[in-house]
Amino acid sequence: MKIFILGMGHVGKALAKRLRADGHSIVGSTTTPSKVDDLRQYADEVAILKGSESDKVAAAAAGCDAIVVTVAPNIRKTRTKEERETEYHEVLEKSCQSAAAVSPRVIFLSSFSVYGNGGEGTAAIDEHTATANHEEPSSKFYQAAERAVLDATEGCVLRFPDMYGAPGDMSFTERVKMAHSYFGGKVIFGANAPLYCIHFEDVVASVKHAIDKSLCGIFNVCDNDNLPYTNKQVFDAITDREGLSRLDYLDQIQAPNRKISAQKIYDSGYKVVHGDPNAEIVEASMKTGT
Image (cartoon, rainbow, N blue to C red; front, side, top):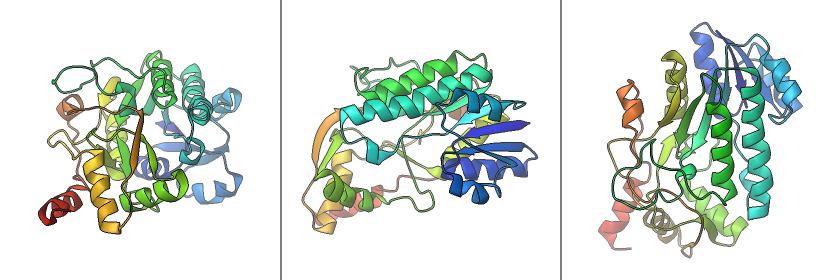
């Protein structure tokens, strides 16, 4: 197949490498001209464009059998609700609209943020759970992007928690330090939600699985066997270890408040490989009483 990867960041490059090894032809995209030479080692063709530039997306996707949308907002442009309104709309919704307009087969890397806090009840959150938090841009525009993709006849939405482990990616300790230095010790998410996260290699594997198995519809992607510690448990353990003041949780971006089921994608033959990267530090903190 010929596959267009819209957004050649760490996930896009790793996915392209695996797909080319299987004999697929890859078209990749970047918004940065200086990255083109590097990306040519991963893609057969490289286009310079934004996902919102529908005409350029259409030209790059010409002759492709599928489009994988891996674009993600720039965290440094999301400090306020107004910034998030602009960034998430431009990067997510417009990119998926551009992709779905030119291909029936679109795979979109979405977010658990569409669930808000998961609503009332104790049952595990699954793909039938209603979306929520419709006013917060980080949720609203992921939902809008999903709708665009699912309007395509072969649309596939993979919902992920926060990703970690990509080359050059910030560790959770570095994220805490950035919250202090860049955001004044305040974070826009809530304290008590389980801190679901997924290694970027598991993200790449799940997208390749969706392509190989021709998955359509919505799939949660996470560790289906274990419930992670909460944001507060993890970040308190990190700040205490690093001698930093504990973070303030603004609860502007709601996150699921209980277990998330990935049984649907597990039933299709996929399973995450990497465990919770934060369990060790929390459990060490519990033992020392800090």
